Amino acid sequence: SAGPEDMPPEIWEKIKNHPCYSEEAHHHFARMHVAVAPACNIQCNYCNRKYDCSNESRPGVVSQKLTPDQAVKKVLAVASEIPQMTVLGIAGPGDSLANPKKTFDTMRQLAETAPDIKLCISTNGLALPDLVDEICKYNIDHVTITINMVDPAVGEKIYPWIFYNHKRYTGYEAAKILHERQMLGLEMLTARGVLTKINSVLIPGINDEHLIEVNREVKKRGAFLHNIMPLISEPEHGTVFGLTGQRGPTAQELKAVQDACMGGANLMRHCRQCRADAVGLLGEDRSEEFTLDKIEAMD
Ligand code: SF4
Ligand code: SF4
Image 1 (spheres, rainbow, N blue to C red):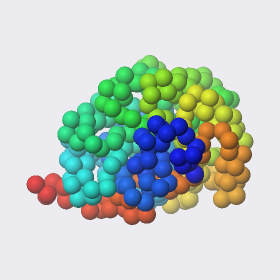
Image 2: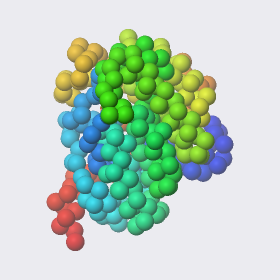
Image 3: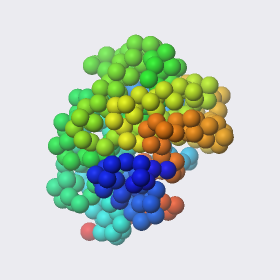
Image 4: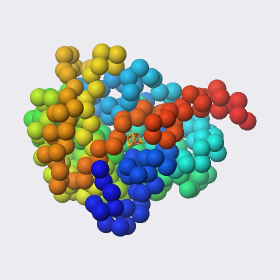
């Protein structure tokens, strides 16, 4: 897992209190996600929108969707109860940047009322190049892009369609546009000094070996961490769009791809894939203490 020896001191300084980036921080600092972004602008074959984007969710629990005002209220309530709460993320349940008004309204209010909380977002990257200015404006200092391929021929097996510039694209063309927008978005964030992590979902038989190339390409463009996550395909996770019968990787398969990527972008191995509305330190989930009715009752 990444540590101070893997990166320049100024980057380590920025991430050492961030549980998603530093294994050490995982034990001392808490993060929370607010589910303000319901819509998505692409379709991933592995998506189950009932839960959370990027496959970063545990099965069986649906995130509570919030308006920006409700989200801000919740963040402030949690921050006053949990002093180790240092990071607020927007990661779904759709795509944060396919809901720019809701996402940036939340971020703007938090930047004003709770400037000490670090802000981050996760995105599939399609809308990213158009929104880099907004990201910088609200001091969002960490972005995660889910990148599962750097070759549209692989991409068209993962993404049946995208919705871009008021138009639906399918097949190879859709994957090519998505790929170009992801690479451009990553380059733009790097140029602006925004720390960018890449998440990849390992889909056996589709992109397993290809992820080594993904690792090389994202490293070249300045990504400072690469997190390779297993496809979750347990039946209780629900029907996964377009991937009937697709299995997730075994622990050995996951480790083999992670090992093959060593020496590329720094790998992150500590992520336990938390849900879109997770609250608390690693290994604890206090989201039930901060449901909407409880927050509304606090004042
Ligand atoms: Fe971040 Fe993953 Fe840790 Fe959750 S489990 S806080 S998403 S690194
Ligand atoms: Fe689902 Fe996220 Fe893919 Fe959108 S980007 S289809 S929310 S996994």
